[in-house]
Length: 451
Ligand SMILES: [Zn+2]
Image 1: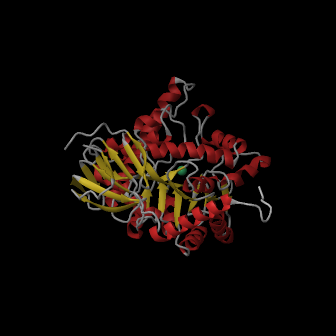
Image 2: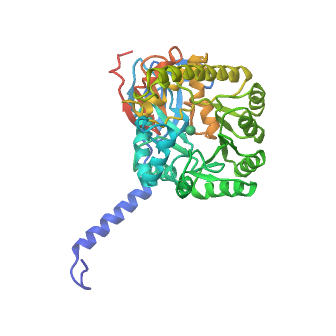
Image 3: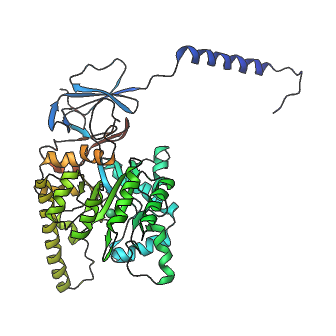
């Protein structure tokens, strides 16, 4: 409504007075102080020192940790969340996720699923799927992920932005956009006419110049990191191409994650100086030694043995089942052995799930945290596993100043378990409390007892 000039407008005076009063108040009061929240519990895992602190008090201001220590005084007016006998630890970090993929065993293996996913789902639809997967990760205690490709054209960047803007609830995301790969990416055989699908999921490189350009493109598209598929069958990215990728990424202080399996591919990745080698189910001792010397992380995407049996469709014959199970046993033993050798060689370990199938009724988060059980089967101690999933993974992401420990100045990403996971690491499969950036995502800790 527009009033004519000269008309009596008492309401404008009232509005002006109100506006003036608000301005004056704002000038004198300054910005409202961030709310203070205190979380207390029976124990806290100091993952940097590898020790347990009793009677911890964590003081949180806004989204950051202001102070932490045993028996600190509670600031006046703070909101107190008392988790009783629970154990606090930093939010879990999954350094290898594919939130925009949720494959179905009933459709067959990776080849069939990839064709159907890429051909049928737009990046927008996949980002919405990622919102569900991300929410499930967060509820399981995974407060940060490094999402390493297979997200259509920049669907992962869309999801990261949506989460950062608060449109949807999910973990912090370090996004890689499309993975760089040799011709055909990780697709199985396609008719020539269908090869356009590859570009939805991968950026193919066959020369050093294409490698450099692909890294530039990823950063233009919003990537935080670079993912390279070093080998798919006999298609292996060359050492010169890998070196160009690493140089181009490191020049702007970004990290490179390399999918590599087998002697040649892991050697190419390590020689090029990538920041992490993913999977490496087969890797020679010489490469492990190089990884330790260059501080290249191994991200062992391993699962408990019984998980692999659920990969078998019901339609297989008893003979096929027996054969497959014996092959799986061998594969699992090989994986356990290489993780033991990696730890013995001094290779830093960061936890990563590589979960991208619907595992029965389990949520994405519930199946992703089963990796810790596999690490335990390789002989890692609970502390080694907890560190792989917190402080080590934070360092791999380059976010060691923001997350990975419960320390002053870090983001308030805190989880809690009923019993101490440094005694029984499988407690990490039963996270009861999740806070991300000072916001309580869930709290299923039973009513605390007076202590
Ligand atoms: Zn993967």
